[in-house]
Length: 397
Image 1: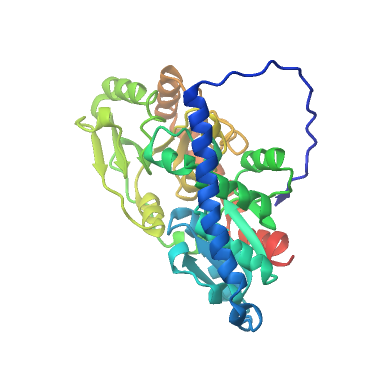
Image 2 (image 1 turned 45 degrees about the vertical axis):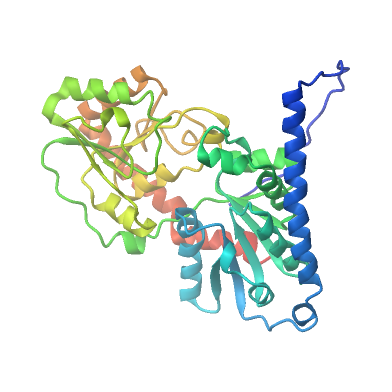
């Protein structure tokens, strides 16, 4: 567990000429301010009703929960970072928690818990529960594992988080939650530098007691290269040509398997298989554990949003005994020792092609990566380690 310390940032005074804004820019700024004002006007109105609700504030319910989790959705981040360690705490005794979505939480739920954990919330209405929690003297924790402030608004996801009221809500959560918890050291540094506050960092967990029940499938002699996850078309842009060259060079000796997403340019290739993967996280990780992949792909284009992501693929490939090949990025560099716990490649077509060829031609190195990554993941990301982080850094405060 690492507690990040505040850093001082020296600012230089520069004399600048007045900036002349275009009519479009002025309109964009006005729209941002109006969205911020409208979103928080509604949020403050809800909070006012909460403050006037005397049956909650003057006669709160007795503390029945150690933790109430208010989540933006039922997503893998919830399972990895909260459900697994909290279930373990519950099984050990004297710990009760409940999960509620933003749409299914009430004032009574907040009043009945000692600590309120918010997960990836950006809707203005959810911020009223942070204000209520503080008014009732609750501890508040904001958990965030992606840097939504750096998303480019050119996709539906980016457009959602770029909405002025949601963006401002995220900033208010970061500024006003008593504890901000992240899964990435780089994201913690980013938040600390911009909002001048301490951030708690520790990664998510792997439930080995459950995962070790499922054996690997037998291999059939082919080299299988795989990827399981969401749409990563942009991240695969430079990998696809390398994969085509690999398939052309090795013929039927190599095949590709994709679960959940396949790059459009590879979808109809005879040596590529694809399966939909709209399953819960436990089914996802079990499928990954039981597959017979020799090599797992983990491409990441270098940009500010990706650089703040967590090392999920390293944890998953290590836990499932798959030799991972990773873009040489700030996400994986602290964890992957090149050629020992994984294989790092420049995020270029030639980098991926040469890296894949090396891994295909060097079975002893692949087996070494599997064994050492498995050991490293068990040492750093087990449930016991994650539970200890939660206890010492947050729940015992």
